[in-house]
Image (cartoon, rainbow, N blue to C red):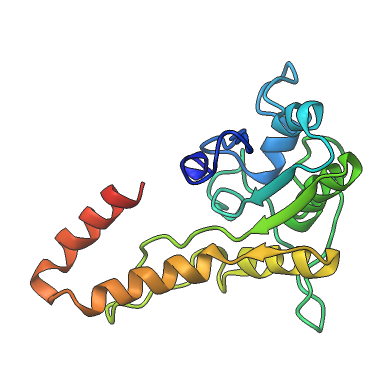
Amino acid sequence: GEFLEYFLDSDYYTVRNYAQGGRSSRTFIDGTKDDGSHRYLDMIKDEMMAGDYLFIQFGHNDSSASYADRYVPVGEPDENGIFPYTAPSAEGAGDGSFKWYLQEMVDAAKEAGATPVMVTPVSRMYFNDDGTIYSHHGNNDEYVTATKQVAEENGIQCIDLYAYTKDLYELSLIHISEPTRHEAISYAVFCLK
């Protein structure tokens, strides 16, 4: 969302970017401070109105199991591969599922008369030796799948930035010779941020 406003006519559109580095879907809603501050969904609810669009993109920090302060479990899929909506046992408990937190944001948009749009997390540049990206939003990119499921189950749009960026990174490496591959990856990270 950082650059979205540069592609829209400011006479007609206003972009409010509430993205916060290091936040998961849970900490975006519950906040990160004991005093209840930094509840970004509450801030959005205060401003969102009918006709607005809410682009919802999480997964990077949610899938980081080594960071208990932000990790959000995706849960076990059922026999059809559908991940659960599990409410937390208490606010801030950290045991609610990823889809449950995403649904809270979808519901907030719908209640305001806004249009929610799901956006999958972008790919990181985690390459196998053959130049392909390996799964990293869960063991099998479960957080990408769960995001798509929320969109489908709510009948809303989903922008698959994971597939787009994964393809972009992998195709970029096809044209880079092995000795310069490391330098090219570093340059790509610099340019894309």
